[in-house]
Image 1 (tube, rainbow, N blue to C red):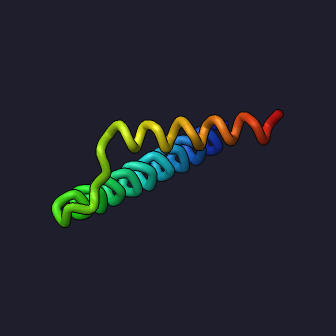
Image 2: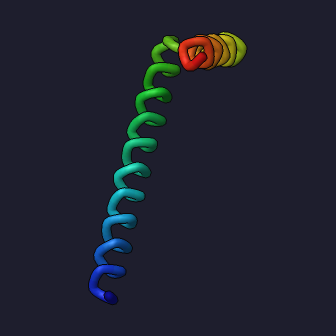
Length: 61
C-alpha cells in the first residue's frame, strides 16, 4: 500500500515538472517572438480565444 502511494506521488511529481518545463518553454518562445516583433495585441488574442471557445461550444451542441 505504501509502495503504491509512493509510486503515485513520484508519478504526480514527475508530471508536474514536465508541465512546468512545457510552460517555461512556451513562455521563452513567446518572449522570443515578441522580441522579433511577432506579437499580437492582447485584445486580438482575447478575441481569438473567445472565438475558439464559441466554436467549441457550438460543436458540443
